[in-house]
Length: 235
Ligand code: UDP
Image 1 (cartoon, rainbow, N blue to C red):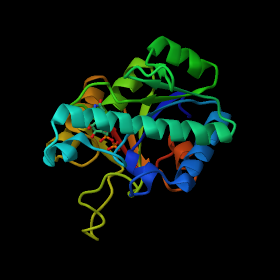
Image 2 (image 1 turned 135 degrees about the vertical axis):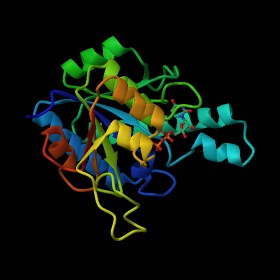
Image 3 (image 1 turned 180 degrees about the vertical axis):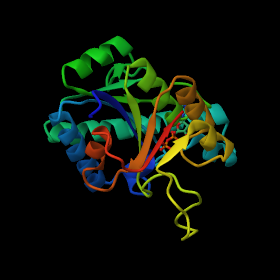
Image 4 (image 1 turned 90 degrees about the horizontal axis):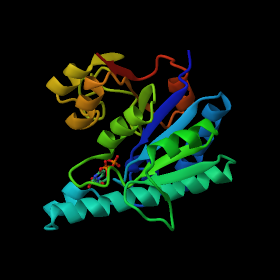
């Protein structure tokens, strides 16, 4: 049974293909996958990360003040939003970008009821600038937006793994992928899915998370259709 409304979390890393900046081939592929999901009648909103530009915590290790570095990180997410908007619109997908930091010339402000209206009209809403607050991550924002916008599931797309593993599969060839996990397992074992704030928010509000591989063509549609791919995290 397909979900009616989903929140897709895309990391900045996936936009850059592991490098600084954006990779047009990858973003074209993402847009194509989103188009297929819309055609099947599911409403899609997206939270975009910014790790392909700046991460506040990393910049602060080089001497920058943390809050300012975090604002740079948030602005980086907006660059990705505009890139995704462009590739989506080139593919014929109607989109709106809403940012948590007001920047009227480039995007709408985050207005939840307006976002819901856009979704009802078949538009994809792309949320940028995180929560507009330092010390947060875009994973936490993804959980918050999924809850506030009334999504049924948080689809956590990864660009290098198929799901959540017992160990890092790139280092440990014996690592096994979990098909199901409880939020408490993720927190207790400190599994690298999302930060603990994001997991706690989902746990406290029963928001299921599906972790899956973005780069396998058609995987977003499979996750939306409720097919058993990747790892499902729930209570
Ligand atoms: N960020 C922030 N507040 C937020 C969301 C993001 O300060 O609400 C900053 C933070 O510095 C973070 C950066 O923006 O490192 C990029 O976001 P994130 O690391 O979550 O991106 P991803 O890892 O998904 O690419």
